[in-house]
Structure formats: structure tokens, C-alpha cells
Length: 112
Image (cartoon, rainbow, N blue to C red; front, side):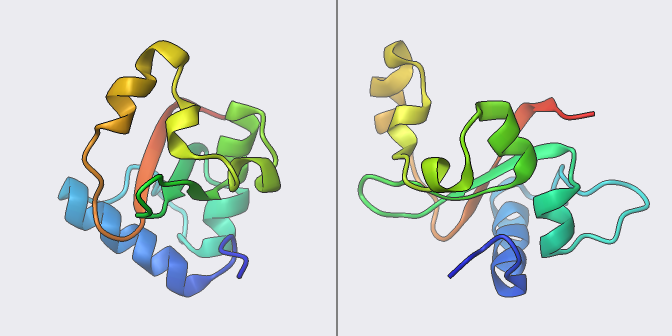
């Protein structure tokens, strides 16, 4: 299933962010009508999500995240999350607590 345009996945991503962070998603932009296509193609923030496997891998990365990290969809969605950290940070990353369901990560760099 392609998650980039999936409205159910978009809802899960938003609700997961709200539950985990306790606020509206930082990737919502004033004056925009957030939707799955908007988040994938036009959002200025980098947004990634991973699954909850024992060795989690990314299952979603919008176009801003793909450009920021210089991976295309196939490359980033096959990448175990632990390999996204610099080698010196991988041990710490491997012990980070994981949430339940899709978790959004916001890249500090913004496009545009």
C-alpha cells in the first residue's frame, strides 16, 4: 500500500503525533488544508514515520524529507531507523523507546 496519499494513514499519523506530543502537529501550516497529498507534496517540514517492528524501519517520508536526507521513496522506506543516525549515535538510537503505531518525526530543516 502506498501511504503517501492514504487518508487513513494520514489520520493515524496526525492522531499519533497529537497523542505522543500533546499538541497539533508542527507540520500543519497556517492557511493550508492538511491532507495526505498536501503533506506528501507541499508541506515544508520533513515528516517521517516508522513502524513498531523490533528493528523499526521507515514506512513514510514526505517529499521534503526525501530531499533533506537525499533518499528516494524506495530507499528511505527500506532503511532501518537505526541506520539513519550517525554511526556514533546508533547505539543510543537502538535503545530509544518506541511508541505504538505510526510516530512522526520532524526534521529541523525546512524547505523553501
